[in-house]
Length: 99
Image (cartoon, rainbow, N blue to C red; front, side, top):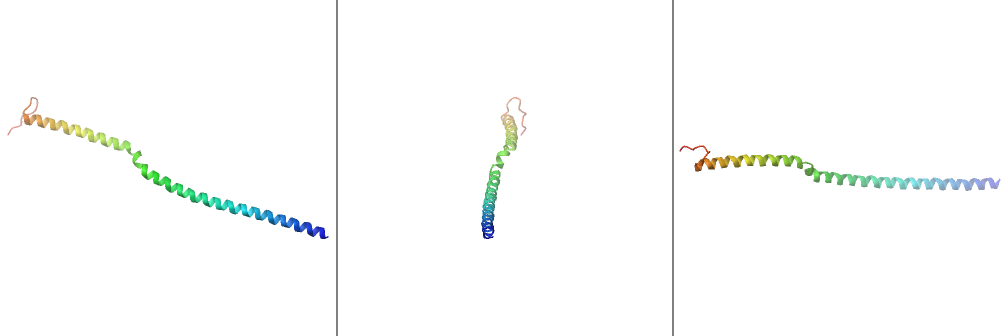
């Protein structure tokens, strides 16, 4: 009979050790998951900052179109100014300005 209790005590201790190891592993996994979640939050904040800083790059096509319109308008203004200068100086092909 004493051997039965001795074996029971041994296996009880083994069971407790297994439960403690499993609990320790679960706690370590939980802490690692929390650390990963914290770092993921920091990475997301960094990505949002990068997106805000590079948003202008993606709008370069729109800026280029705007600059082309300004260039075309500048050319039209230059042509009108040349026409007016020619008219004021009485050059051929320019309409005469009556005073």
